[in-house]
Length: 141
Image (cartoon, rainbow, N blue to C red; front, side, top):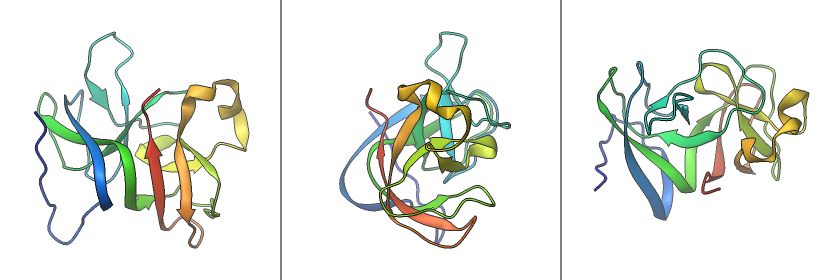
């Protein structure tokens, strides 16, 4: 069963329905950041600290968690306040991939094109460079 915790004024689900799953954290996780499955074959999730080409995203963390703690992850649904890496200006329709520090970037640039499973979702409404945006998260691959 999944749980959901509001982080003060920060809410990351734009509209329901949404698919949320609980995972154990591998390292510290910050609410509102993208997470990926631990490469060790566990069902833990972690927040990438560097951009890794082709990393397969698990979704968007909905609450902050310490190492070994539980975190709720939006794996499918509309998300708001999705963080863009600096220098990336989200445009409607862009496919997005997980980048460093749990932020997102365009899948249409860089070496992320080598793995189609790296797609975390699509931009629904763009914003300025490096700002938060609205996206449809789809990590159900």
